[in-house]
Image 1 (tube, helix red, strand yellow):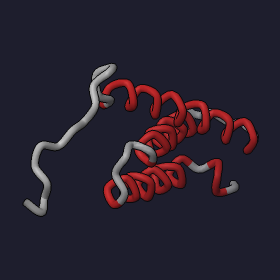
Image 2 (tube, rainbow, N blue to C red):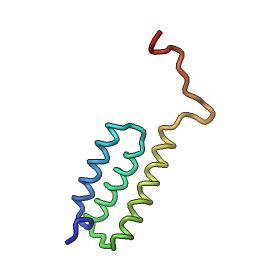
Image 3 (tube, one colour):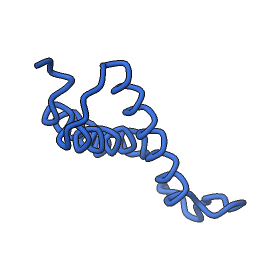
Length: 89
């Protein structure tokens, strides 16, 4: 069996992406990590597809996760983040 068809390989990828999100926060890697976890669950449930189809599923799920995270964690519309005090004051 090839590596990309194993569920635990996708879990490992999700862990690596989760660690990358901790090191460089911004909800970019977190969307990809969620997509990788969902692909791992689908593979564990018995999904068997080709590599291009699996990558398409991963990309679509990652995009959906990123959009949900962006909507959930974004500032309210029209609000701008401002700072009153400078760190050097």
